[in-house]
Image (tube, rainbow, N blue to C red):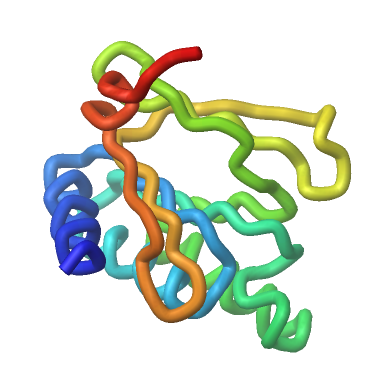
Amino acid sequence: ADDAAAVRDAFAIARRGGRVVVVGGSWQAVALAAAVARAAPKDARSATLVFPEATPIGARLPKDLGKKLRKRLEKKGVGAVSLHQVRYVGPADDRLAVYLARADDAMKTTSFKADLVVVAGGEHVQHAISARDARAAPRG
């Protein structure tokens, strides 16, 4: 049930042109990011896939196939951020601030805003956080 709710939220945000970040390099994460991009208005960059490998599904696909998959995802409107891991997600006004670090050098960081972050690995969507969730989280 949590999987379905997270996916519904991701599609609803994408349909209105919001940004959904999918964390993970598994085939499930790739499929979710691609579906979110399809749900978005034309030319909206609503889906971003963040993964620690050089290519999506990098642990399972040969490098040349992974590169082709990445190019296809980008052509379909999925932003692909390779060799990065999410370090922190927190509130930023009415959105989320997503902070990333390079998988091979944690001192190299970047950040951007999103409306929903979905962790998709293994068989299921493991967790989703919205701006409302981030604002309600205890600070310490």
